Image 1 (cartoon, helix red, strand yellow):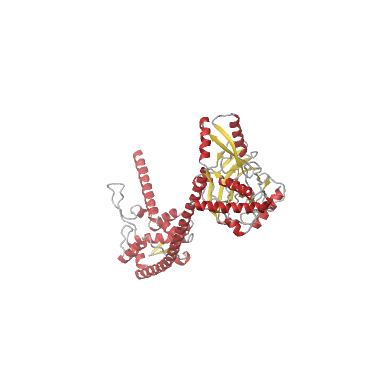
Image 2 (cartoon, rainbow, N blue to C red; image 1 turned 90 degrees about the vertical axis):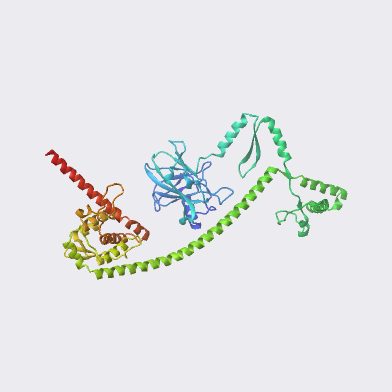
Length: 557
C-alpha cells in the first residue's frame, strides 16, 4: 500500500502543483509517509495516515520535512471544484512529536478559520472531540500552491499508543442519521411522518413532516392546491428544424408560448396537436391511414396534450427556484461592482507608487546634500578650538557657537538620516583615541568594547557615559524642561545638542549595518532621548541609594 500511494503521489506531482482533483482518486488507506531516500522498515515517528472510513476524506500526503506535511483533500462527489471537508486518522507517532499539517487545496476564500474556528481532534484514550487552540491555526493564501488558500495547524502528539483523528468540525455520518430516523419512525408518533423524497447518487433523500395530526391532512391539501402548471412548450420549431426521433441527438430549443387571448391559445394548441400527431406517426412507424379513423388519432393526440397541460410542480418549489435565481443575479451584480472598485483602487495605488518612487529618489539626494553641508560647516568651525575649549572649561558650562547650535537642532529633527558611512573610514584612530566628530574623542579600548554591546538601549547608554560621564549626566536633562510629575521640580541644564547628534550618528551607523529599512531606522533612532533619560534616572537612583547607605553608616556610628 505504501508503494502504491508513493507512485500515485509522484504521478500527481507531474500533473499539477496541487495534485489535481482528477488525479486524487480515493482516500489514503494506512499510508505510511517515509522521508525521501528512506528504504527501510517504518520506524516510530513515521506517521501512518488513514481516511478509508465513513465521512473520511484525505486523498494525498506529501512529506516536506520531518516536522511538516502537505495534505490534499478530495473534492465533493458531484462538485469537483468544492474542497472543504477533511477527516483522517494518524498513528505510529512518537511521544512529544511535533508536526505541522498544511491542508493546501482549500477551495473557499472566506472561512471561519479566520475568525477563531479550529479543527477538531480526538484520540483512542480521549474519545471526546476537542478543538485545537486557535493560536496554532493559520488560514492564508499560499503562492507555492497556485495561490490556493491553505489552512496550517501545529500539533504535538503526547501518547505513542494512541490513534489521533482530525476533522474539519464535528463529524455526523449518514449512518448515524439513518439510525436516528429509524428510531423516530419506530415510535409511531402522530406528529412525525417520514417519506422518501428521492435518491441522490448513492443515498436516499428523506422528507420529514413534523406537525399535529389534525393539521397533516390540511397541510397536504394546501400544498396540492398551491401547485402551479408548467408553462406550455411550443413545438413549432420541431417541424421547421426537421423530424427528430431522439431528444438526445439534437438540441431542441423549447420556447414558452405566451397566451395573450383565446384565439392565439387555440391556434397554438392546434399546431401543437399537429406536431404531436406527426411525432407519434414517426415514432410508431405508422401513418394516419393505419389508424381506424382520423378522429381516433385526433383524440389520442388531444389526450397527450391534456397530459402535458396537467403537468404541475409545487408552487413552493417554483418560488424557491425563482428566489435563488434572483439572488444569484444580485450576487453577480455585486461581484461586478466589487471588481470595478478593485480595478480603480489598483490604478490609484499604481499612481501613488510611481509618485512615491520619485519622492524617495529626491529624498536621497536631499540627504546627500545635507550631509555635505554638515561637513562644510564642521570644517569651517574647526575641531582644534573645540578640543581646547573642552579642556579649559568644565562640563557644566559649555558655550557653543550659534551656527553649531542651529546645525544641532536640524540634526535632532525626525527627518534627519545621516548617510551611511563605513565605520573604519569615518572614525579616526590616533594615540589610543577614537575621534567621533565635532572634537569628541573617546578611549579606543572602550570604543571597541562598545561595538560588541547587544541592543540599542545598552549601546546608547554606554556611549552617553563615554561622552559625558556620570558626573555630568546626573546633573543634566535631555531637553532642559522640568518634569511635570513633581510640582516643585527645578529644570536642569540640557545636554549639548551637538553631542546628542553625535550619539544619533553613531547609533545610525550601527543600525545601518543591520538593516536598510528607513522606517525601522527612524523608529529606532527616535528612542535615543528615551534611553539617555533612563540612564540619567538610573544614575540618580544609584546616587540616592549611596547617600542612604552613607547616612545609615553615619547613624550607626
